[in-house]
Image (tube, rainbow, N blue to C red; front, side, top):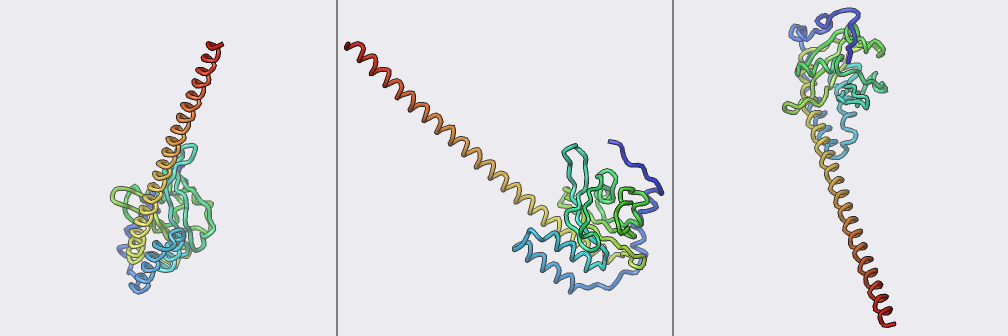
Length: 237
């Protein structure tokens, strides 16, 4: 598969993760974070179908971001690896994107397996030139369960005045742990449901085969009995 060609600058020019350590972090709001995690815990138990949407909505609020999202890796029918935006909030709430795995912020972040901060990423990741409003900064955090990479969660600023810092990294890392656990739980439940469906289908197939065999044997016995009666009648005649 051929890769897209950077058009404006190098990766090192848009990757500004190190500036996080030079910025003065904003004040910690543990009360808001605690309330957010409590809300997510309740939804995981009661309304798992809206959990991811709630997660990105809380990411926008807690980080005072312009947009937030969760990206999950997929392989298309043609074999292309992509990152599908599966949950969105903020100004990207109605966006529909599936950037390539091999040339995207999320792909690079998962390769590094640590939070990464990008400035105007479309200058290198040219796929995002079509995304509006433009990204001024994008903080991407990997979703990891042990050695398994499930995707990424990210926040975007659309204004030059909003710059992310280490407090945003801490908050997003906390949300990432919850998101990864929720996705892992959902995938495990889906796998269990699929295994149960396959088991039920196999059981039904075995039962149908047994019924078909019994019907065949019954018809064979009836046919044999009829044939025997015919032979006896002819012999008597």
